[in-house]
Length: 129
Image (tube, rainbow, N blue to C red):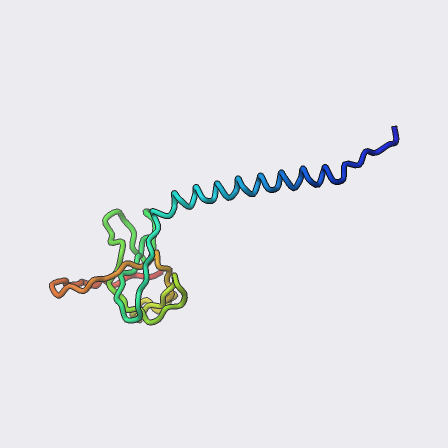
């Protein structure tokens, strides 16, 4: 009745096998998720001095920079890149009107501007609240 059975080495071996099995399954799941996610990723690298468009509506029906609506533009005029903060973050030269907006943006918020001489940009002033 009062005896305890110690399984020392067998219990440790079973736990080690279970942990190894869990690690293998986690690695398989991570590889599967990576295989699905990688085709959607694109490596974007900008140089200092490049012009980029800034995304003002990251998701539909969310108001950014005072712009809202189905037909509102998703990107605003090209801004110059001042410097590279990290591999995925850049500092932009924003106009004085946007001085209260932080000037460092993630790569996903930027789109490359290809200079075209026939391209005429019309800049609409933004209302910030």
